[in-house]
Image 1: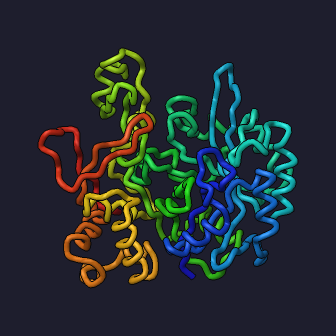
Image 2: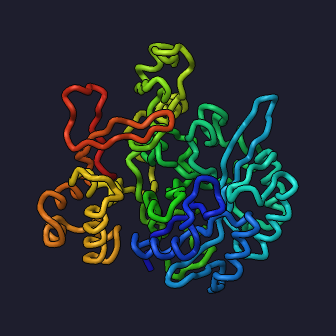
Length: 409
């Protein structure tokens, strides 16, 4: 059984999240996208957990369903704590095998933060202490660092992270077998660190609205769908086919910069001026690429043995909007999107369809654009300091900083 899985998302109970991020909306858009397995999201929030218990059908072995979509119990937590008088902020994904275990997790974490305030709760809890609590509940509870390179909340982030998993998790580092690359990095960047060779790289949307589901995702080939089968596939990489990746240049923390001053610089250019904003002379936000290069002990292009391959994709609605020079939410773009989705069955099928089939469903211009997007024939104005990158079909002559993206692995 081949299944596309998006295991990190958020419900309507998380801050800055769409009201449509309920089980109905998530399930509907999972079918539109072609996603067969979703993370439940936000299981520490009392109201959301109540909805999960009421509406999800227990399929057994840690898998639940709502209509035609399967779910696994996952959530994200924000650990905010001091280590050696330095403030650390790290987001982590938690995976649980049952609702009973989820109840025990909530009971164990509630004294460190107000679980009812946010679907992604802020916990005044060192990640090492959290690992001790979770291990005391069940060894089938797993922790995976979320968007590991994000400046403020990634385990390797430039603002409040660590330089290694060993430094971050101490004696529990051996129990961390995977990390989430995040939108501003991809597996190729992570392969530059030999210390991560033992770590499986997963990718998820971290979406705050159901329409954004699957902008990053994982593809598994499993004999049977179960919590254990999914976690074993991540641990061993057996049955882990590939990940779908955002172009990291589109991620909003890829390059260095200062949003207020509209300054965006490559790591090399930033280092030459001491990482200080040339406009206001304040420290810039050090982006993901810069941080990776600081910790890397390999050159870009190295592919470790037994690594999980990946494919870079651009969401179909973004491609259509760009080609038609119209907004993503416009009627014409929406109509064309659903025409393609209906023709191929789902968005992922459309994005990976042969060019000759795409022509039959649309026209030569859009068909070529979809092929160019997946084969790396696009250019980017990289994202920085909270600003998403901008895609371009041709290299702008006036912008020497634009760069062509690498082709898919």
